[in-house]
Amino acid sequence: MALPNSPTEITLESLPDLLKNDTKVKLAGFDVDGIPRGKLISKKKFLSVAKDGFGFCSVIFGWDMHDQTYFKELKISNEQNGYRDIIAIPDLSSFRRIPWEDDVPFFLVSFFEPDTKEPVIADPRGLLKTAVDKLEKSGLSAMAGAEYEFYQFRTPSNSQGPSSERNSSATASFLKENPVHTLPSLTEGMFGYSITRPVHNQDYYYGIFEACEKFRCNIEGWHTESGPGVYEAALEFCEIKQMADKAGLFKYVVKSIGSKFGITPCFMAKPREGLPGNSGHMHISIVDESGKNMFFRESKDENAEYPDLEYLSDMGRHFLAGLLDGLADVMPIVAPTVNSYKRLVENFWAPVTVSWGLEHREASIRLIAPPTASPKATRFEFRVPGADANPFLVLSAMLALGWRGIEKRMEIKVAPLGKGAKVGGVSDKGERLSKSLKDATATFMRKGSVAREALGDEFVDHFGGTREHEVRLWDQAVTDWEVRRYIETV
Image (cartoon, rainbow, N blue to C red; front, top):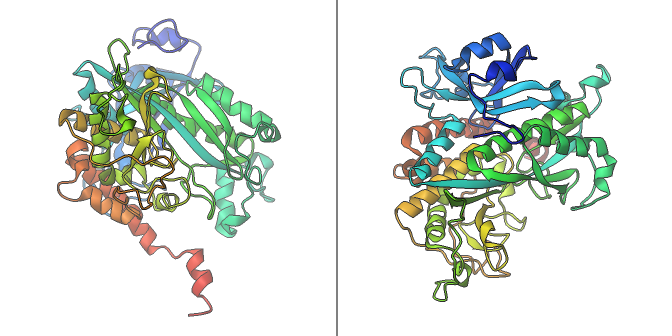
């Protein structure tokens, strides 16, 4: 597929000319937490591995986000197999230049098994490709969009170091010695959709927008959100695999630009007690080879079971049924951290049940369709994921669950939330979603779970094992809250 703003498709033959003025190339792939892991290599090295790939240490699938190996040995990378190499193959279509690093060339890689040449089961890009391949065999494609909210904090100055080192590492050091609430927000108070607040940090605000455009993570909408120092970005919708790349790289852009301004962006689901959390809403639709939206119903269905479904096609209804049927079983994917479940509580504009509704912003799945939307914009917005979720895994789960619903011609078993109905309220008959990562992981990994059917046993066993690791670390932690509450009185 030809790159935006590029006259021709990149091929192995065109690489030398593309990189003729370069001496180095940056490469990265994503781990299960959605963190890009990579390295800088010489142009000579890159050209020699561009076709068949190169060995990359599998430990990125054997340790957590702080490089601590999992307490339970998982299949891909472990002590027994010596944390073997896997094969990383550059995706030439992912080419970008990093504008804040002197336009160094950048490519994403996907990871493959050395023996079988099959995608590594935990490779997020590979998992999504597997889900997409099922659609493409039927002559269909998926389109997607992503929205991210995130808090931003001013990196505290370090009296013992230069001001140039005011970055997220300095924030981590600060929090070792200081309580979290002393970390200053970028701006104070609640002022969503403000057109004056961005002026307070104008170079940073416009710098992110422009860097995203140059780095092919184009922002469609960019504004302040309700919360101290909170911004929200809606990324330009596109083909689903490209959207996952954009969403994963968007965090990389924001964190990189932030470090140059002494700002620490925070994509935790719930950074501040008593305030709204950070969402990571995902949108999805299916199109045919001509680009026609397959979720739109050409003529109003006067006999629809619910008025909300009047303009949703049969395919769209089966897709929705699949999402609803499997939602509770994939919660560790859409809410992957202990902190995720602090966001998913009643009365904070966050969905807590298996629920849906036409243009209902409290439901887990918001149907966007006529008469309030144009036919070509008919789609589902998945509102459960937080900004901490891995976009590749979320979109993989959405697509796999929805396609399962289509293949099985599933019927919708949950009535829509009515206008004005509260999620989790008396009229909400949907199942309550897991309230903790521990419970969510047990549901995800249980024998016969929808997750196993839709995503495969090997992936569920691996990803579930990584979440069990996260739960174990939390179970062993002693928090500030516990000490403050019990140190004197018990």
